[in-house]
Image 1: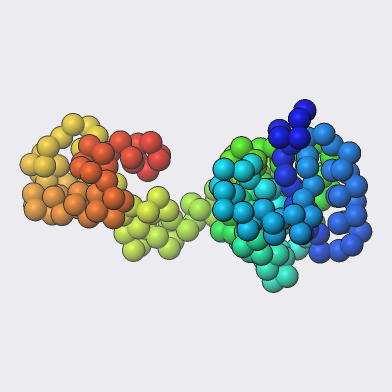
Image 2 (image 1 turned 120 degrees about the vertical axis):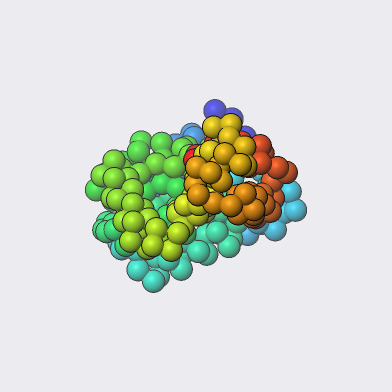
Length: 221
């Protein structure tokens, strides 16, 4: 594997022993190019950093407390475009916080072998995410509860579309015109037109066909 193909990784652990262990383990791997603080700052300062391979931050913490959150935010601010988190304790609140902070991969410390860490870094480098199966289930459960108890009563959804907008777009996708949609949903035609106008304006789309294509591609309907 050439140097150009290696994944640039910046390692940050909140305790010196974990920092040493991770750096020592990854230094042996030909897939990884470790990035120092100074090198990370230099890369971040470059004007063409978007064309360079994304730097992946590997952050190791005991719990996702205020210090850990600060490190995760600092990694993004310093130019790391992907983040992998290793944690000793990952409860539901910590999981949601990690996702909100843009973490794309999570691994428990007890499962953090060198091979698994490298695999997670490779997955993050290409823009994919990875969570242990039970954590993914818990995350989906939280999203479902949020939708049911917080968003739905306000007419919203986690997709960013309201229930009414989703219903209208689905009927447009089914080939129905404005009059048919209004009749089926018991809306006025003006209301249907306003809904479609709001969606296309907010998402900066060209027309109703573009809105449907976008919603289908993004999995919103």
